[in-house]
Length: 122
Image (cartoon, rainbow, N blue to C red):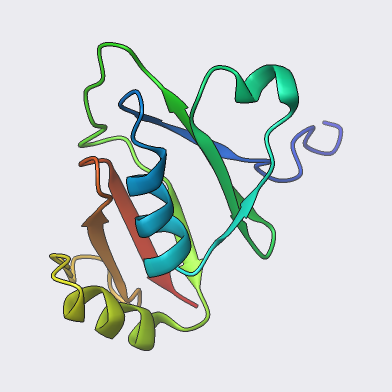
């Protein structure tokens, strides 16, 4: 068989409610420390916002009948896991560390819209 066709995930998209870009910025930019990146002009008209940190991108797109993703989730590998968890907890974000995979330190949080996110210690 040939080499796998897929080399990496380019981005993950999560949904968000209409008109809540400032809340997204507060969570993803200010709390998680990601950098907001400009959306292409045609896509910017639809609302939402995009963020990146290193090679990781998350795109938040507006969904009219928004429902948070409570099971499906992106998983981010973190170089500064302990300090990020401390910052999240200090901001009142609930951090759940299941401890159910031997040798893996990870947790689950929910963004400002209720979307589930997994953080993994690198």
